[in-house]
Image (cartoon, rainbow, N blue to C red):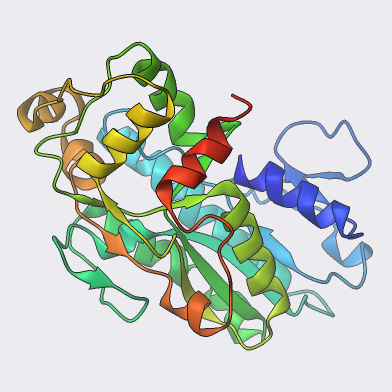
Length: 290
């Protein structure tokens, strides 16, 4: 979802965008690669790459975290990032910047603690995954490429992501808080996530981690209430913590019930302005065309 929106925004401002795909290319701007077999496109033939952007990763909240799925989540992030970073580092003229996805899951379950980018790593599988994901860019950094880690929160957009799963349930009146609803949720509108990525692309002074999250995180209870209002339905049916753990196992505690109150300190300090800083307006914009 975010990659498509970002590609569109880049093209609208006149950039030429090439997309790496693992299937047979069906357009001139697609380049085939397979990071798991070492199949790489001839990036050097493109000449003068202005930037590389890497957003891939298997969906964290779509299924139980079995040992096999944990491997898939790890490989889809860490392996692909490392292979791309190594390929960029070997270019005769590397791009000046690599924008690489990460997640606010880096901070883990931290209760009411307000989490800027200098907050340390949390405990658990997901924080460890995020740390390894970010460390995989080291070959690019060592080659002198400016690397920005987008620690992305829940993205609210009209064409997929969390709202694609939640909105239909809420419209049926089946929405409600997860567990006790007191856990903090960091979120960002799709428009602001794209703008933040472009901001990081253009600001040569930004490097390292930036939280891609709206400045006003909410509790799960507040999120539930606002989404119910947005679709004009009550949102009163809770999902008890024990039921979530039975259904989703480890993922329930680390992704659904974890409290992560991340704030975008570095973006705000750099002068970034959010179009949708408040949840109600972000939900209204995302649901307008859905």
